[in-house]
Image (cartoon, rainbow, N blue to C red; front, side):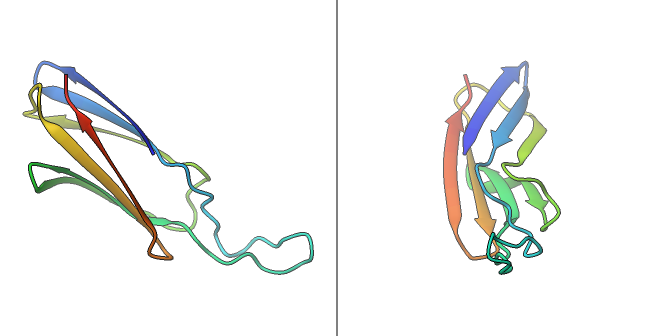
Length: 99
């Protein structure tokens, strides 16, 4: 997961690129077998233990999804903790400190 956060005043724009194959469960491999579904279901952001963003997604989202959102009332030094979970239960976490 790649995360960028740009603070302007007290508003931060957070950009997240999730590296994930996002298999819908509808595609087939070269042998004609169905590729099992595996896609990001939930993406969250927390600041100081408080959830400030949640996105629930499904199988229709493209490979390597890009997410962008804004948060108000932020300041330099705040840490944004991000986490995604997929349909197989796999997760990835990342943090960014605002400058």
